[in-house]
Length: 92
Image (cartoon, rainbow, N blue to C red):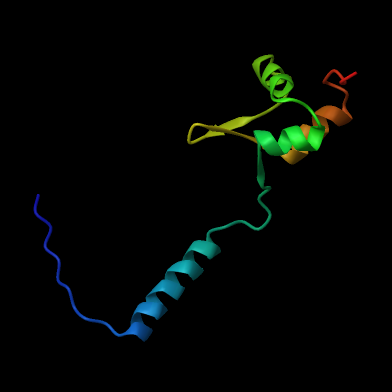
């Protein structure tokens, strides 16, 4: 399939306006109430645990996590809830 493009020159201010519009539209699609996902490193730091401990808890399904784009993320509120209800062993 052949794509036909028509190129027309635009001014810098028109280009800037297009970029600003695209950014506004992208920001409008972001939910400010959506909780930030934590990385494994952030969870390790928050809980003061090792990579091995976090891996073990994931493997045993003791801690909730999600995968996005091949990376593992955690919701902070879910992690704190697990500890609040004493569902995980403590580090001693």
